[in-house]
Length: 339
Image 1: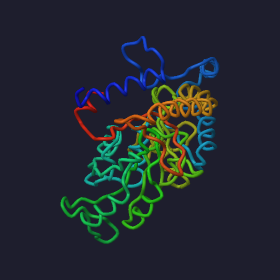
Image 2: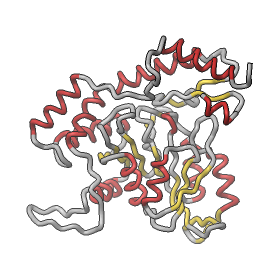
Image 3: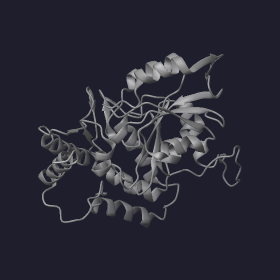
C-alpha cells in the first residue's frame, strides 16, 4: 500500500457510506433546491411587471433578512462581490490602501479590495476554524505596522491599512469576538465577508453583524439563492443610507428630474431575483436542517478514520455547514491534490 492509498480508499468509503452508490462520474458540490413555492413567487413578480430594481419583493426580501440576521439595516445588492466592494468603499477604503484578508478565501474577497484600488494584505488562517487567526494577526500587526496619527501604516510598504475583512469559510464562524479586540487595538474597522455563512451564529448573534458592516451572497451554489445576488448588513443607519444611495447610482429623489450627486454604481438587486430569494428564505430552516443532517453523517463516517477528519463547527458556534470539508490528519499537498 502506498502513502496515497489509505486516504483515497477511506475517502471513497466515506462517500459511498453517506451517499450510497454513485452513478454519476461527478458529484455537484451544491445544487439549488427550487420548488413550487419559488415558481409561484417568481410568477407573481412577472405578472406584476416590476422585474427590475424597484418592487415589493426587494423590500420583503430585505425585511426577511433583517429578521433572520438581526441586522437593523439590509441593502439587497446584485451579487456578493459587488456587496463587498461597495461595503469597503463606504467605510473609506481608497486607492493605495491595504486591506487585511484571510489567506484561505475565494478570489472575490481579494477582487473586491482591488476594485477599490487597494491591495489585499494576506494574513494567516486558523487551521481549526479555517478563518483569520486573531492571535497570529495581532502578532503580525504589532511587528509589521506603526501608528501615524489615527492611521495604521505598513512599515514595509508605507501604505495605510484601512480595514480587516474576516471570512466565515465554508460557513464556519471564525473567532470574530477575538478579532474585534485586535481590530479595536489597532483602530481598524471590520467588514465581514459572510458570503458563505447565512444561518451561521456565534452564540446567538448572526455572522455578518459583528463588524461595521457585513455581506452575504446568494449565488446559485449558496445556502439560498436569488440566481445571483448579495446583501449588505449593518446597524449603522448613516452608513446604510450612504450604501443604499451609492447602490442606486447616487440619484437624488425627485419626481421627474435625474440628478446624481456622486459617481456611483447600479448595484441594486432586481425585484425578480428578490422574489426567488423570498421563497428561498421561507425554506431556510429546511435547508439548514438538511445540511446539518448531512454533516452529521460525514462526521460519523469519519470518526474512526486513520487519515482524515471532518471539519466541524467551532466551539460555541452554529455553522450552516454550507460546504462539508475534510482535513488530512497529516498534511500532504500531493495527497490533497489527488483527493
